[in-house]
Length: 193
Image (cartoon, rainbow, N blue to C red):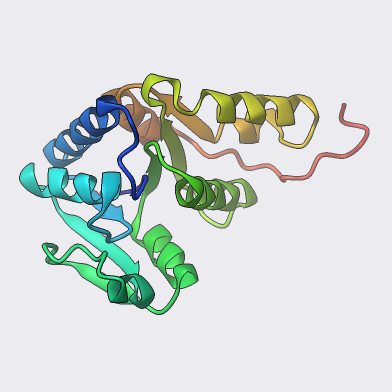
């Protein structure tokens, strides 16, 4: 893996552990010479991730739509900040630049972006691993929902396994590097109960 896209909140959240794990992730990525691809912002956990990565001597690629640059939330300390025309272009370019994806704690945007790339893996549009850094159980309810959707036959067990999860960055990076994407169709026939 040469690059990992990290999705995370544009707010900080209430727990110091979110920042602590974000910093640990960036230190580990920099140590392994894995570039950070992220949403290009200077606010919240997102801005902190970029700052942590830069402080650790790592490479950072920010991708941000012009509308957010206009709102003055672009990280101006990046040597590689790519300004695009829309959120759709942002997500597409971030996916193209990345070998794997990690979601730290975040809100609707984090969830939407992560679920989209996991769906692209499921559909075979790319063959990239997706992982949740489940800091203090932040994603427990999402993982329970995915298990429920699998039990109700909306997700194959092989596709449920696309979404990896760990509490520690080192372990999640190892899982992402070793993961092999399943090659089977998304769709489940009614007789496959």
